[in-house]
Length: 221
Image (cartoon, rainbow, N blue to C red):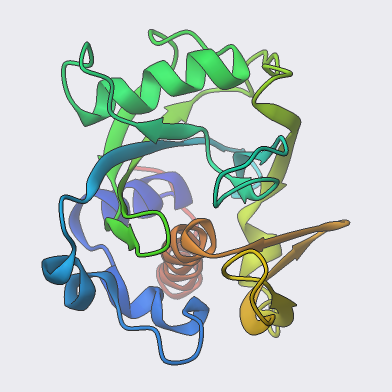
């Protein structure tokens, strides 16, 4: 069984779930399932995790650096996505539409293969549903300059290395005293918060697929 098969099987049948979120939660923060039920009218939203599974058994993902704006997630590293529009058929449609708007990726490009564990964001009251879309090769991308400062292509191996999780001080609420939070360094960028939780679940799947491959041998079906 190939790495690709292992990876997709884990993603579709054996998600690690919120256990993978815990290492990336700020101190004192509970997992989403424990705080979501206390939320008042949480805002349904979706993000698209666009991936390419390389022949080298590497997995590339597409991230964005959001432009500066007045909202809670200004300038953050994230996945393409946003809140549900009244015209969206479902949450997957939201993720695909936002991908088209933010990085110029047509809603018809890529194969939807599964979803990761939802994340609730207390600071913005967003309930985020992550959808994984597989591409055979890296698609052509165009950043929406109003919403996206930069498109970032990264590899899951970056987030799977020993000591990949680091800590920095961040203002969780603008104007408040900075809080030390866990996250990942990507070049000059800092990935933390809900997107880091989602990345760590995906990186956990990546590590498990490689572990299975090393135990079972590298052979094709």
